[in-house]
Length: 149
Ligand code: RB5
Image (cartoon, rainbow, N blue to C red; front, side, top):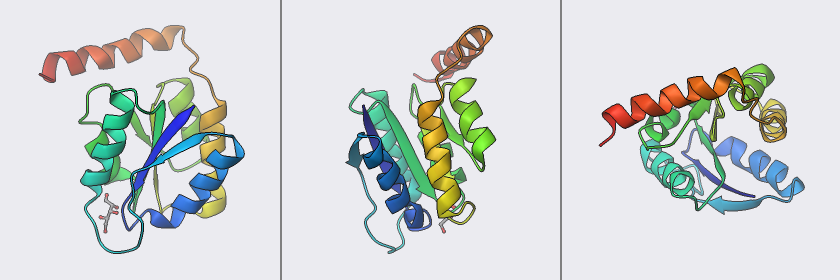
């Protein structure tokens, strides 16, 4: 399993925590930056991670900005991406279980390190439930096909 990670200066506080959890799980990391707290533009990092997932270079992605919002909005503009902003264990679990989210997005100014580590773990551990959720996720893909050229 390979996971692409990307963040801006607002999310970088959580990056070491995310890396630690991925390392503990024996997951290969593709690190698209950023690498320090210098102000950068989150769409640039969203695009790198989203393209890696969309093109199959990575199985999944984790993105981080101040709130998790901007970077997820940008990632969701890439075909095939289902990026979910999560703030707690329940949302991190459900985005995997019900939405088959292939990117987890968190805010470095919203969740603390301990919670972020637990959210990454539950997201990794939770399989897509399938069943009635397949048709719903397929409907998301159908919207994408209608509007993404
Ligand atoms: C950067 O200050 C901040 O706007 C960004 O990290 C993120 O929160 C945007 O959604």
